[in-house]
Length: 341
Image 1 (cartoon, one colour):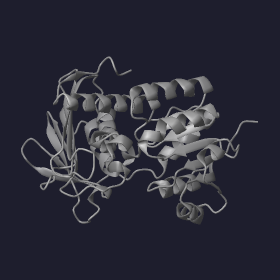
Image 2 (cartoon, helix red, strand yellow):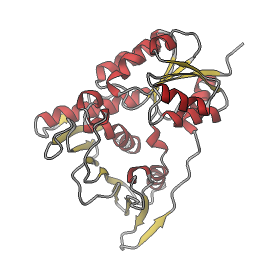
Image 3 (cartoon, one colour):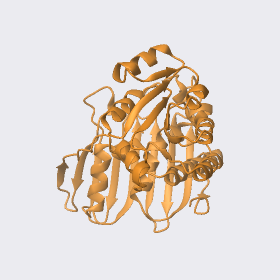
Image 4 (cartoon, one colour):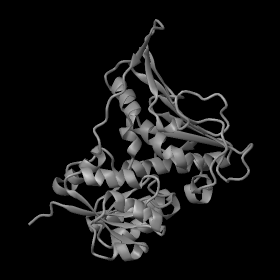
């Protein structure tokens, strides 16, 4: 008899823990069976949503327990490879937080191991499901601005970075990896032309209490001449739009919603500009709740292809790695067509 309910274990219950917990609770075919964290307070929070889940403080014990079929790994990025490898070796399906790993070699090893074990390996690219990005993508696909030739994304402002692992280059991979895992994935999921070159630049100017760059920029050039730019800055007193997209028949601008202090948590305000300069406000699409988790079940039960694949997330890591190497050479162009699959 084929399995119809998959027992999930959450490895580390940090900022995104509730999101996965609630999604599992709302998705037929998934059950939260276990939670692992070294902080007992976080385990208590998890049990408030799923009181029947077993708790662990040792990840290796949970992985080997036989209590779970799939593990969601939400540990810091520099440990993604380690825990994914252990989980796959234990014949578990694996969902990783972003980025997949910190090097393409690590990604390739995990993909190969998942294939050998016949297990799912996928990255939770949750920003693909943001309402503002879905709206921008929909406008592009409908031809609302004609042929896209420039796509710019920006995140940041002028503020002192936190001292948590996000700002530690050895743990996060650096400023390019931290937010680039989201925004570069968005860019590469929209622009279908083969990517040819990447350049990156990191600037350290003000915030000496952390090791991430204060301002980081990545420029992508595609085979057909389309260009995309991603910027992550903690030195931007004037915040650029979250999205600035140019097409042959118009433009899309996604302005940050400054109505809250937590600006990055709010969807951008999308406007469509016509060649004559007229501006049309576009209502953001409403994403289907927990669609990523539902697609997990469809894949596990019926092998229905997921819109996010391990290969796509691996290629994002390849781009970020090339950008970091470029930054060490002050923005030297890096050819990446041989690095992508």
